[in-house]
Amino acid sequence: MCRHLAWLGRPRTLAQLVLEPPSSLLVQSWAPRRQRYGTVNADGWGVGFYAPGRPQPARWRSARPLWGDPSFASVAPVLSSGCVVAAVRSATVGMPLEESAVAPFTDGRWLLSHNGRVDRAVLPAVRDAESTVDSALLAALVFGRGPDALGDVVREVGAADPAARLNLLAADGARLLATTWGDTLSTLVTDEGTALASEPWDDDPAWTDVPDRSLVEVTPDGLTVTALAPIPSTPT
Ligand code: GLN
Image (cartoon, rainbow, N blue to C red; front, side):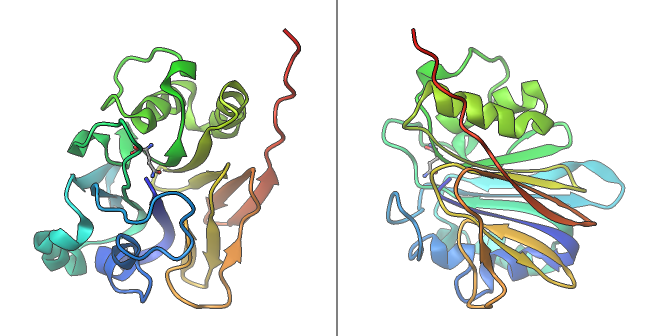
């Protein structure tokens, strides 16, 4: 994905989170402000969110540009959730263009989005990946290891492919986890909840940039950012 966001807090509508802000994910799909790789995010979009009493997320994805999905725009104002992951995609060259290649990927109660790229050859063979896209293989690896190993997986994959960009964003309905490894991420902590986003969706001065190579954890108790130390390369 080339731009993603997550929300944990009081319920907000999907329109409030994804469509309405001045620099929303919708606007970022054609005019991102901070994107370092790619110019438009027109290769699909996805939203995953949790409903009360249902531990597994609901998910809506499409291979079309977000601006070309009026049905979503119609329904988004009446869908609300306290935990949401959303993404718009700019496909990496050579990757499949299909709905199943669009984040967020899911397994059980988890959702996961990837902003970046990785050489698929460095990833271990995994069963159950949703697509052959690099992000789906990475998601399957994270799900297999358990999302609590998110930081370790990023450090290991980053060591195996020094050119990899590994900004990941995961949620389980009660917690958000994110990494920065080669691309941007900002946080917004408010009285109502916490947002993580590849780039701020408005000009609120409270948005804070996360340093590269960090692990972010958000719970109802607050937000923590810890450094992800690279794994030293071993002489062969
Ligand atoms: N590599 C992923 C894909 O092709 C993500 C791309 C991105 O972050 N721009 O979908």
